[in-house]
Image 1 (cartoon, one colour):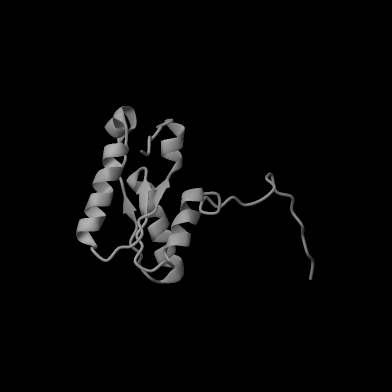
Image 2: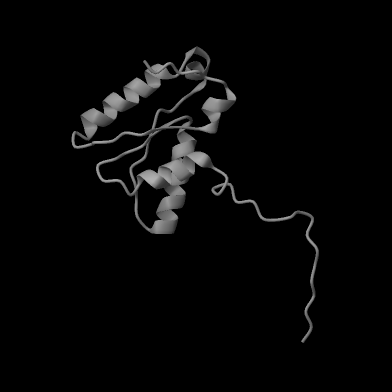
Length: 116
């Protein structure tokens, strides 16, 4: 029996879920009672993470999205956040916490939100 060691071109395997900061924030919120996070970014940012969590944990989780699109990216995304929070409050009256999680999309297009 022989053992062959081969050298790889890269230092390690990069899994996109491990480098995704919004995924970590979403993961932290799924254990909080009466909490549904609102992901401020593209719809894929929340759907990808929901899919990974459902496959890994064998359970579905509610994760909302502001569904930021081109017009909102150019003209400002604050109305999308307000609409998302109002929708969550109307649909889930027992919610106690709605964390707003920003994604890389929001950071790359340099949206500045004024809270107050």
